[in-house]
Amino acid sequence: MTKFPHRVSAARRNATTLLNQSMKQVSSVKQEQTREYEAMVLKTAKLRELRLAKEAADKEATSAQAEPRRTAVKPKRSRQT
Image 1 (cartoon, rainbow, N blue to C red):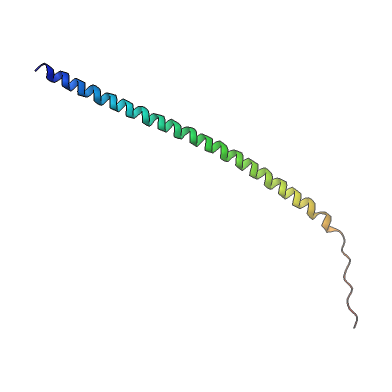
Image 2 (cartoon, rainbow, N blue to C red; image 1 turned 30 degrees about the vertical axis):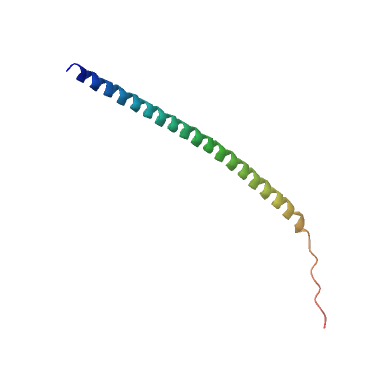
């Protein structure tokens, strides 16, 4: 009967080893997901900044183009019948 506790402890060691491996793998996956999320957040912020800068430049360009068009327009002459 001395081997019975040995078998239980061996089974417990095997289970603990498998559990530790599984936990390491889960932890690794979570860290990778966190890194990917942070990269996505940075990319989104950069793209938002570029979009806002482009929109501001486009708005400025359209307002600059609209100003010269406001020159005095000659009134049309009416037709005489």
